[in-house]
Length: 389
Image 1 (cartoon, one colour):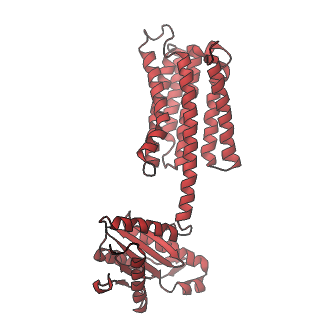
Image 2 (cartoon, one colour):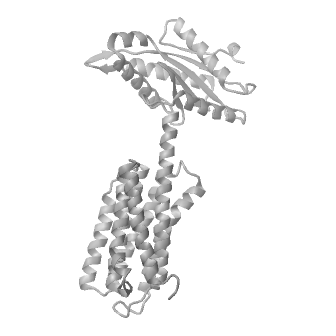
Image 3 (tube, helix red, strand yellow):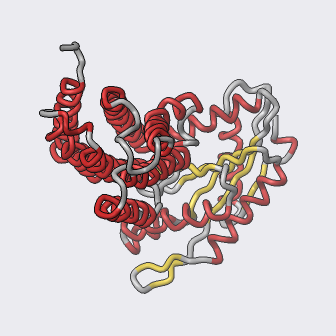
């Protein structure tokens, strides 16, 4: 007997699916790591056990009835895998498209098993699996395309493309056989078992890598974002500002704006800290809606904020600060049945290429903020040319 004959490969595949299902169960239920996605992965591996549990003990898997059952399980597993990927990437896509393709494919396979030639169920199921696999690659690119490098995306997408390629090869091999209803034909069973084992292993590692990436991204988000308002934290804003200053030295300008909510302590004392928290959230929400997509709002502490405006000159940054001031003045906070008027003061400044770090620009913007405060609040003060380096 060969070292890795068909029966041995199927037993390895069976054992791996059992182990993978157990690992995902532990990750989701014990460690609470993406529990919904983990449950879908448990279901994926359990579904793939159905044809293997019988095939591992005999040669019947090579026949077309058993192959159709295996294709049906692979179809269900691919659908569950796509749903798990969407959960892991927090894709907003509705599961209806997956349900429709899977349902139509399964019904077509069942009808073909009863009425059609033995190869037809595998062909119908194969087409559905190919669509689901390519859809998975599409969702992966849409959900992680901006966060991962092209090489990383290619490596992660490779197993899903492998599923589509293997299924396409099987469908083509069957379609080119000598007529539907003839002698069973297609890819060699040993090759299919080997490819299935490699793809199952690769898909599991890929989903676990995505899970780790999601956890790392979540930790980074918590470290670099303010949990109350969703704006950048001081650390996150300083990191973004340092990157912008490095680009300034290569010829890409930026402006900084400092903002402070007027009479915030009085608001807290009169209406409570919950109202103060709502006011902070209200300000950030309005300001982010006013600014461009690539502008950044950071909460430096308390009621003090800073804005980074890439590719902006002093005039444009001053106009942006004025829009934020007017937006906040025009839309008061509704809190506890009351309308709470809010205003803020702003200071605007530009960095200099002669400065090796962005700190001096922030200090100048803070000085302008102090000028706006002392001049009566609810206004914008920009550094005049003589106050710029």
